[in-house]
Image (cartoon, rainbow, N blue to C red):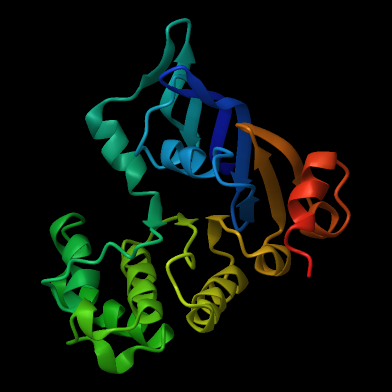
Length: 252
């Protein structure tokens, strides 16, 4: 069974159609990178998948459960209770970290599992410490976000998403707010997660990373999927002219 399915997704902002009949499916353990120029619809697709935006038309399905179902009048969303359950399937890592500035690192990670998932506090704290260790931040639990580098803050936000035990993680340009030397820290964490078969969708402009870590790459432009497939084929040997033009800008 697919973890995520999106069928015939359309989205307008005013008179502008930003997603034009998009179809996407992600199976368990798959790592999908979405590449494309600014304004191609990548982030809007991610926001529709994570229920931060509503689709005009199309189906949105997690593990066989409909978050939204297409109808003659457009997408019809499930009840608030049903959507709450569906949201527990995924975590989202933003480009600007979105940590609570007044909470320590450990509290940023543990608050939602304790308050939202009503899990055992001691167990959650133990798991949070393990996640910090995995992120190379064992000694930073009592720090506050302002005391950390951008790369460290982004690793905390990944730990926070993982603490909720999601079936799938979404990353929206996870390195775009970072200096180049800090980008490697985040890419290593995502590579490690891929090695553990975490299901992920990553919107990225890091082409070599998309090629090395993903097992499926999607190139979007103008609100459509222009080309998709095996990363080596799409990035090293694209068939579509639009893909070639886009990738030429990244080749030194």
